[in-house]
Image 1 (cartoon, rainbow, N blue to C red):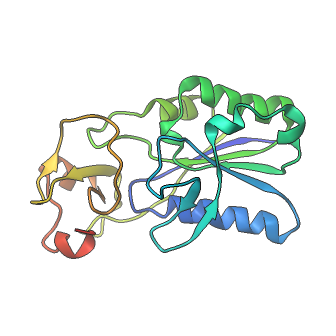
Image 2 (cartoon, rainbow, N blue to C red):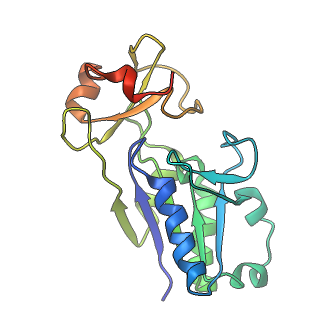
Length: 196
């Protein structure tokens, strides 16, 4: 029986790399996996899922998935969604229909909460409806588990206000433990760990 998975983690926890490895494993075994991401994430400039370690693979925009017929979706053995935090509640409901009515597994990767500690709409729906919820773990600069996403400016000041969505990667965000997120402490060597 197909399931809806939500694999969440902070910035820098290798969620996209994991998504790309899952796709590779499916295709290595002669099965088709459909890579999808929301159109709001155009950091690569095109429909591509890319990871910090240099792995990438073409994908379709989620909006294209919404236009596919049931037969087109059933031609895949798995749907993999990257940056799932950017989905709407209605888009996550579509994923539940793909699982429940078409019997196609869906594996979503994304952030749980934003830089202010608030849930993203897509993540909130996935936390409510996913069959299996798994954390993709990484560590803070201090060695503790990183559970919070910190947005920072060019001077290393951790920001707690602003728009929920601001595209960026290592140049704007870093995963921190809750203690250092609350303190706004990026660590003594923060400039070496970011792309400025």
